[in-house]
Amino acid sequence: MPHPRSLARLAAPVLAGALLAGVPAAAEAATWSVPRATTAVAASASSDQLEDVLMVRINQARASHGLPRIGSFDVCTDQLAERWGDRIARTGVLEHRDQREVIRKCDNSWAGETLVRGTDLSPDTMVELWLDSPGHREILLSPRAKRAGVAITRDSQGRTIGVVNLVRHG
Image 1 (cartoon, one colour):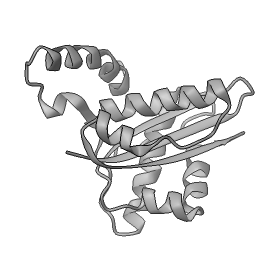
Image 2 (cartoon, rainbow, N blue to C red):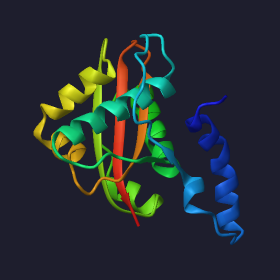
Image 3 (spheres, helix red, strand yellow):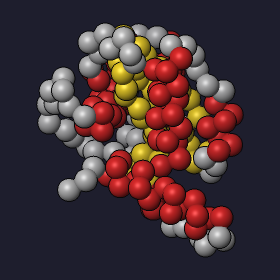
Image 4 (spheres, rainbow, N blue to C red):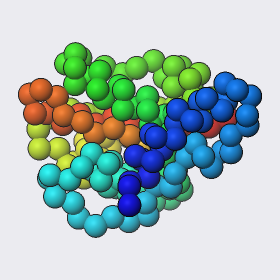
């Protein structure tokens, strides 16, 4: 069975067409659930599998601080995270995007972004690095965060790039 992220990517053009045609789209169609648990994944795991594990680890960190879990991925926010990760991989420039773009393009009321790039980065290591950085920690542990968009990709030098956009919709 295809991964929910793959299905969401396929559904996004249909949703966009429906919205342009004035057909209301159900809110559920624009999101899919963040897994509550994952099994261990190998270093050769797909980006989708690594992204799921990353969100499980972020939710574990949130729970250890008494915060609710991020319950769903958001198609629009996820597409922006994927594009940003691809941009970083292509240009080599590791910089944050203006979060007003994530708010405006995806009809969010709040957005925060965490980035990381390095070699041999596992989802666990990414979360540890972000929690050790005050600005990134504030985003991961924000009570405003309700949905996510996540990208894990590699650049031409073999470095792993992680992008997490946490948002509050509407």
